[in-house]
Image 1 (cartoon, rainbow, N blue to C red):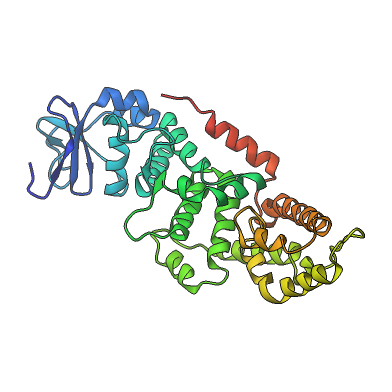
Image 2 (cartoon, rainbow, N blue to C red):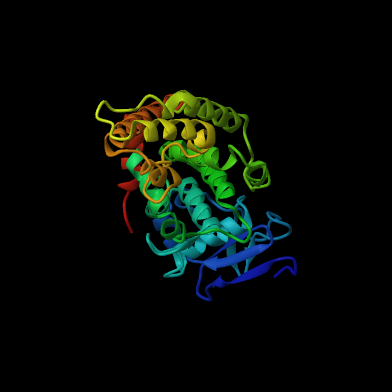
Length: 329
């Protein structure tokens, strides 16, 4: 074996009958099993190979008398993907924790090489953290720690950098139902933080002009549905504390309208700042305010796909249903 090539020890099976090469790494695995899992690899394996000994890949197309198949994908992604197929317990179904890089590698390559059960398994992991309705967004805000623990961010990776990577892969594989929440999540992280913007720029994904435009458009949509005057004019005719409630309106406009525009869909969720401050007004006015807020959230979410130039929610949910109903292992 060439000194430049390195065996991946846990993917080197002594009785394997094909060598997968990616960069300077080689894996000895099972051709028949790969062909049974991936229609794309099955087609690749069916192509007649050149006679052994021809200079195909840096001086060799064989290793240990076995054919070598070179894949053009990133080394780390391929090894994550092969481990998911060959090593039991390496990539379990939700809610078993999974690494963020492993998750996105398995998803991208399972889509590319048509391994449907792993593509579905990866998307189920993401579906638990990337909701497609307002209730799901608000529930995620309440249970974020337990949900995010199921996807373990790698090294110093920040949540917004992970969101950017999910956004890129979702567009690449056509899982467009993930896009609205990824863009919303990036809005909430970047609206007031230049550090978060740096995290996106410094992430592994390429930042497209489309993403920049979408972040601009979602910011405009937030301001349209949650304007400065949003927190005024809700007093009820049955108000029991007129002066107190009007004072609340003034304080809300002056002090926290920015916070409402940063996290509009969860500002009045349980345990949030807005929820606690809503207790400062009488029950009648609180009811009117929360009804107004709920309507604004629903209208914002309903208009989000069109704002981002995506298919309608009906079409996005149909794509999601097909993605999550894909064949299981």
